[in-house]
Length: 152
Image 1 (spheres, rainbow, N blue to C red):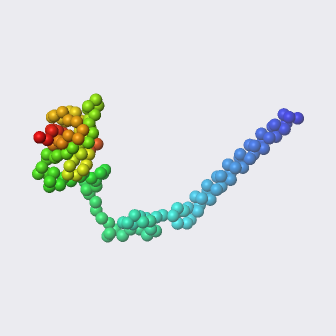
Image 2: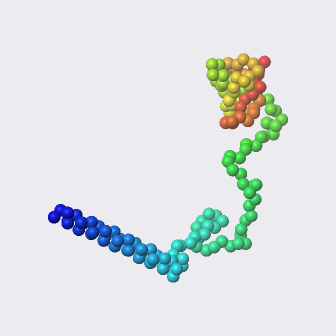
Image 3: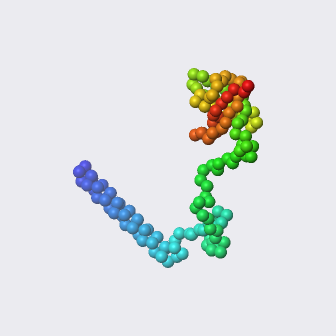
């Protein structure tokens, strides 16, 4: 009896699968029919010049032309001030320097910004709290102090 019961369950499962498949096909056909009859089936939205969603298409007369060259990707470059252009030599104080690792930081006396300094950019031997003069160069992570000399 267990064998006939098992066969019966198998047939019932197959019938259920077939029934579900047919229902799914009917629903799919109904959706297609609705899309053809109605307004496209999917609501359509437009984006206006301020970035807001609207249901009306944008006015072509208000379209703004943008050149691809004018688009700036990333962080805009910091513009040099007149003071930076005329006096490239700056003065400051060594905030930190590790001789074993070969790098440190110099605090600019005018802007109070800390600038990275590497041992390769030194002209004189420096230690913490020394007053120094230096120039700035663009590095990988910002401005680096180079051509560092002790103030006399």
